[in-house]
Image (cartoon, rainbow, N blue to C red; front, side, top):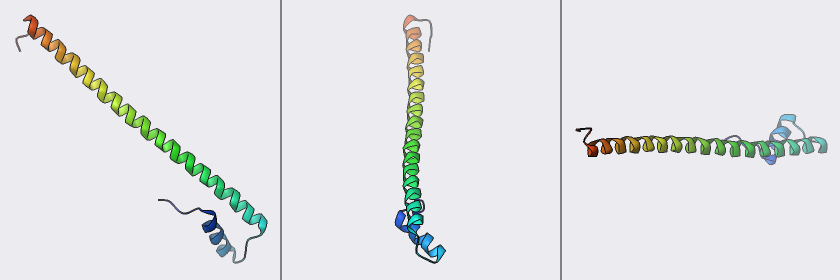
Length: 88
């Protein structure tokens, strides 16, 4: 898991770094920034999940196509054997 960017943690860190309490304006700015970070993290998680889903679907599609080709080849082979044109 990544770093903790919750409002409480960020306020505590910035307050410690400044060595003084935050002004109302500074606090409001941190509220905006942490809210935006939360939005972006959610978007990233949603996008990552979408990419993983598309990759799984592509892998399944490829496997299905491979199976279809194998079934076609076995069907052709069986038809040739049945018709007497392929002495397997």
